[in-house]
Amino acid sequence: MPNKNKNKRSRGPKKDLINRLDKSFDEHLERAKAEVEATVPAPVAGAASDVDTSPPSTATSAIFAAMAVGPCVGLYASPKFGVTLADKGVLLIVVAVLSVVVLIQAYEANVESSRRSEIQKKRSTRELQTYAIFFVNLVFLLLFLTVGFLILPAFGGIIPTEANYFLTVAGNAVFVYLWQKGLILKGLA
Image 1 (cartoon, helix red, strand yellow):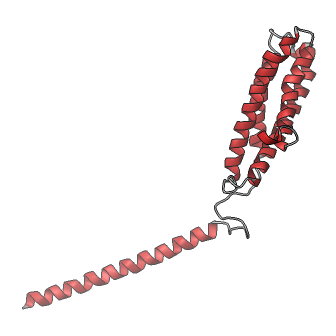
Image 2 (tube, helix red, strand yellow):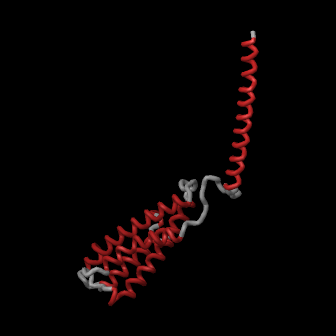
């Protein structure tokens, strides 16, 4: 019989220990939950909680626009075209900066038009911006290659290299921007 009492006694302290551990775990869990709730910003009224509505980063857009325009400028500054930084550096830089600014505006126009689309409403701003950068750069570079190496050379050299550069870099950037704003080719934007 003493064994039964001993077993009952041993169950008591074990049960107390388990209850104390459960209580300690619950307290720790509540503290962790309170810390997480304190660090997470409150949802914006009227906005879906899973959609990022912050404005796209202009620095990121500028980097990607410069990455699209840079090779085009480098190509025209090569010996093949005869446009050097020493002779036409101002033209190269002004057109490059203008094209970067216009491409940034085209990215923003693409993001805004995507936000209005029913299909894209649940996408975050980062996803929309990533798609805009990819799409606008792809169209810009395809137009650059088509206009710069197929269409304008077909005129047999009557267009000066500087005008060719301006039309293929800045002209295509403006074309893409106008397209994304819906001012031209409305059905394809």
